[in-house]
Image 1 (cartoon, helix red, strand yellow):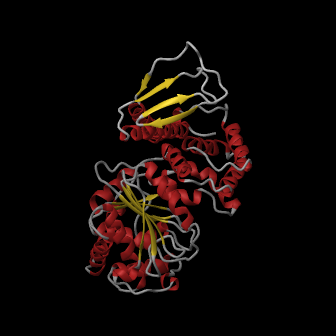
Image 2 (cartoon, rainbow, N blue to C red):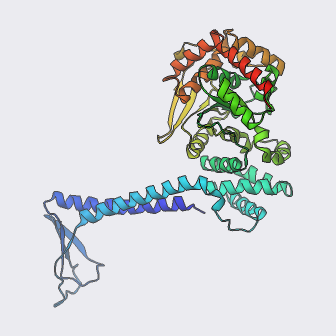
Image 3 (cartoon, one colour):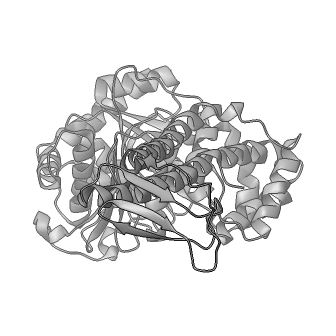
Length: 465
């Protein structure tokens, strides 16, 4: 079932094609010296079996031999302004396609709840989507994806098998598109506890996880460094899922209080430049899906939704993905969700930038087409290292490693932190180029500003409810 937006765009394209064809013919006639095309016919009204001759801007419709001519029904010449008609149809077609796209993309995120389902209850609607996926469909609209998320949350307690079937089929069919990710994220954000930062524009540096490399918490340290450089960071994260130590685990080991109210987190962001948003506290509805996800033991769409669910609605992000095939869907989802500027990054199997080789990047900017480019660490003056040089350990070990780095100790891990913090400073608008951003991040590490930011954050968090 195609969405209204796609149907409208297709109709608009067809209308634009017809209009451009007529306009082209009219243009050719004008080039031959006539303002209009005059049609003269002495043949019967039925046009089948006739052919036209075009000469000096006039087309005379001539009867094909074998057809009888009318003796008294010759029609008077009629003028057809093909150039004007064609141009009008072309403009109408382009306007139709644009209008459907504009209305569909702008209204779908705000009016998800107003989309009436065809089936009466959540379980039946989810079953209908499963049947479509079993029929090898690969397309779900943004509205359908949002409704599927609502259905899963309502059905999982009574029928987890149905939810599992949907999740597995969605992945098998390659239907985890940018439109689906955006729809599901919008549905979850409707149910989330949001954090208001007022007029403060926030940054998040985050990864999907799941790369299996067990690297130290690079994006967490990069967030602290970016805050030390002047960014306002709303770091969204959780405890470990696929590694020994998650962002929440290492921050807790460093002494940051995580159990804070939304207003207290907003105060941390305003006064120290950084706050931590513990995912389960702001997305309690996802707890009902946790047992099912653990029992499945396969990657589902939930493994890549996390970076899209920042409760502070950060519009500037650096998002690392572990699988390169996820880059474009993630970028498209961020575009649909209204990001101001985001980099989607992947580096040789890691869900973050690292000096182990070139990093693939897709830049998403408001009102701009997606831009794909590559960054070589050697161009930033950083020596190459291996993944093993970036591997961490348990929470205590990672906290010790990050302490040394934030206090200015050089090395491969510090270089990786600098790269990710530098990227954050670019998307936040504090640095013009990645080279400039990395220089700012390196100075924050070497000068002790990054460590001072962590100390201020830690002290303030301990005094807040």
